[in-house]
Image (cartoon, rainbow, N blue to C red; front, side):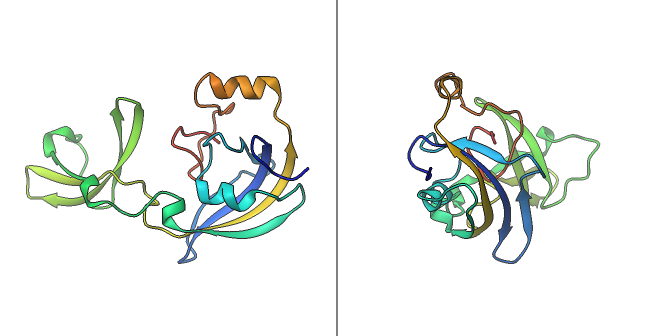
Length: 172
C-alpha cells in the first residue's frame, strides 16, 4: 500500500539542519506514527511522503515555508525581568517553558535589556530553517476505527511522546 490521504504511517526518521546539526530522531524501535491529512506532521514532509510505501527510504528537504515558517519579527516580545526565576542567571539563548491558553510552550531569550526586561523570541525554534529528513517507511495501512476516533477526540496523537518534527499538538 502506498501512502495516501488518511493513511496510517509508521516512519523512522533523523532530522538535521542544513548546517549538519542533528536536531531529532525517532527512538530506535519506536517509529513516529501518524495519519496523513490530520495535521500531525509538517506539511512539506507529509507532501513528500505521498506515494511512498513500506520499506522506502529517502532524504527529504523541507523549506521553511512548508515547515515552521520564516522568523517573524512580531514574535519577539519584551517581558519584565520579574517574570523570570530570581535564582537563575538569564543569558541569551536560554529556553524556558511558559504557560499559555493552549498549554505549555517554549520561549527563548533573545536579548537582555539592562536589569528590567528581557526580549524573548516566541518563534518556533526551527523557524527559518531548511529541514533535512532521512526517513524509512516502516508501515503503511488503513487506520483503525480507534485511531480515527482519537483524531476526532482531540489532538489525534495516540502517544505521549513529543517530537519536534511534527505538529503543533506536540504529538508523535
